[in-house]
Amino acid sequence: MNLSMFNLEGKIALVTGANTGLGQGLAVGLAEAGADIVAAGRSVPTETEAAVKALGRKFAFVPADFSKPSIAGDVAAQAEAALGPVDILVNNAGMIKRNDALEFTEAEWDEVMDVNLKSAFFLSQAVARGMVARKSGGKIINIASMLSFQGGIRVASYTSSKSGIAGLTKLLANEWAGHGINVNAIAPGYFATNNTDALRADEKRNTEILARIPAGRWGQPSDLAGAAVFLSSRASDYVHGTIVAVDGGWLAR
Ligand code: NAP
Image (cartoon, rainbow, N blue to C red; front, top):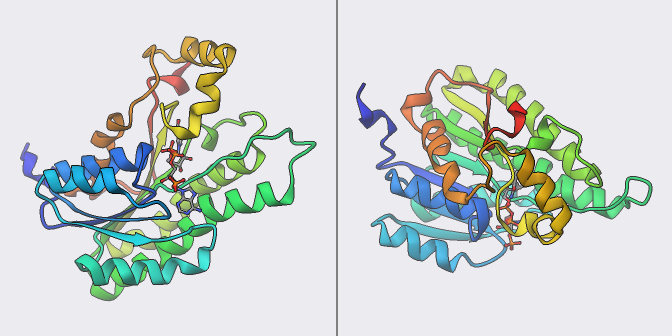
């Protein structure tokens, strides 16, 4: 097999929420495989910029608050103006609100759905319009979750958004495969990031979760790089609408 099919040199990847956590791991992983990176998000991605530049890759930052999905077209345009046409989009920015379903508020519902689902759709649309107009094809990777498959507890809007991401991934794959655009998702298991601080700080939940992970450890952001490079590269040209679980075996239990 020719390993050059995994090479991302000359490709431009737009990664949302790349300043920390999984987005940082994804951006650095794609840069290691050769891609230049545009990070879009609300916090300045100083650490990620240093790591990407240390790999000899270009880096640009587009400020973006994805609780306002109407900014998507502008973010795509700014990304293109910064480094050139986007070949790879990773919809990673996401948030979670925890509350009992009986107490859950409309604000807790709306903000999570806007960031995790609505912005992911409209940014995909904006980037895909460019890919279709250029007839270039491209790669879109959505970040799903174990709660794209399971219900979870006390996270009504998060589960709804991530189950929505699973459906949206398949719908967009159906509509855009004919344009040479591969739309797929990665479903991370339980990873050590800000998103799971509350779970890891709760000794009982932490022990329960670890006991259920066959790999016996929380995931690290770098654990996602292999799947991300595969789904961003020519190696996945015939892969459409799939959700790759990177979960230490969680779903197999
Ligand atoms: P994280 O450390 O909290 O990072 C979330 C990222 O999203 C940050 O860059 C954050 O920016 C950004 N973000 C949140 N709200 C935003 C907004 N309104 N506008 C722009 N950017 C915004 O969490 P993470 O674990 O890396 O999560 C990354 C993705 O993986 C999310 O979609 C999450 O649902 C998903 N995921 C995580 C796990 C896990 O175990 N950690 C498992 C499955 C799926 P700020 O730094 O400015 O807040």
